[in-house]
Length: 93
Image (tube, rainbow, N blue to C red; front, top):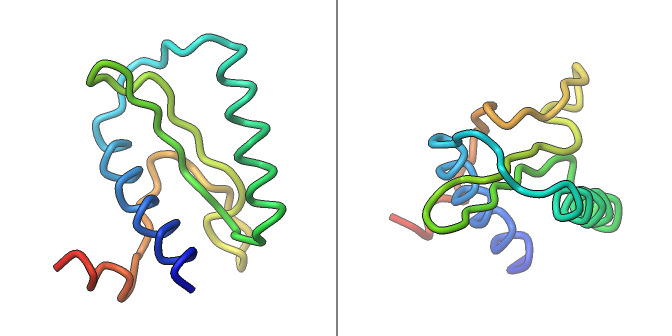
């Protein structure tokens, strides 16, 4: 359960970073590697979605969402989507 909590807390931080996303300037090779890893993690863990933000020198250089934001009805994850985090945020308050 603590692994899930760590992932969810990471997701909260990613969502905060996504709010200030700018133009994406990461090179295609890095982008491809990130996409492969993210898709593998979703498949291995069974987590329905994930959002990733890469920050370099204080600037967001890459954002991407993977999987499904909602299972019913099926809704694709998007970088600008805001997720309800439920009681997972209690550890931060």
